[in-house]
Image (cartoon, rainbow, N blue to C red; front, top):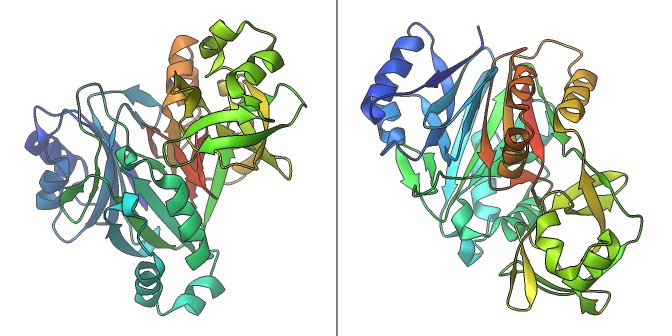
Length: 365
């Protein structure tokens, strides 16, 4: 077995790690990826002690997915052995809000595998994972800079946390705030990446962002007018009611038929905050959310014409809240029971930039 997934609930981190060690007895992981509820203190240290010599990375989570299960207050773990991941290189970039230069980090990671030419010439084997500590609110600029220093595809998500818990990312047996964890995987049989957002164009009217604050993710104007006023006009609803539609009618950047979702958060300082910033000069469409289970099933059925070794689902927290509201958690999770899979409810997804209200899925073949 090249990939094994487990969902663990323990009395504390040491108990959780003990249970994980028992469940994975006889299995020799090359890489472990985990998503842990914030009720566990220092889960990364406990796992590192239980699995010495294994590369272990992870993120805090609001709620966790594993195979056909969904829960909170747990730790979802994927263990990958050398039959699925031949090698892995992990680096941590701290203080991402300070706009670090990523050139040296990526050069070092490429050189670990023999140089950038070696990686890019075997592009179908190498894939990047990125996990952000979401409190830094720096994913947009980081992903843009990442794209300028490597042609390697990086996918992933931003940490989330249950109420009252801390948002963190994990690597090297340590926890980090305000940081990004980068990993390059050399897969044995290759990989695929799927993106499904269950969002469709509501209005063909294209709106131009004419005033925004990217640093603080605040949108002020569409087409030179207050953005809330224009948004209400497109939806045909009263201005004072627009916050009721922020999740059901997000915004979308449409490029070559592909939709990249941006969701309003709250009215603030004469504008509206976003979960992912929109720079001035961007054209968007107002979207509507469709049937998440049906759309996800279609995406999986069309892409998975083979039996994958494992799936990693970076699923937006808004999508989790929507499937809970619609009472379709069970049929949604059953879609992922076809093979070993884990996931968590993210505060944004990474796929050619920072997006949200999307499911971005890394498939290990």
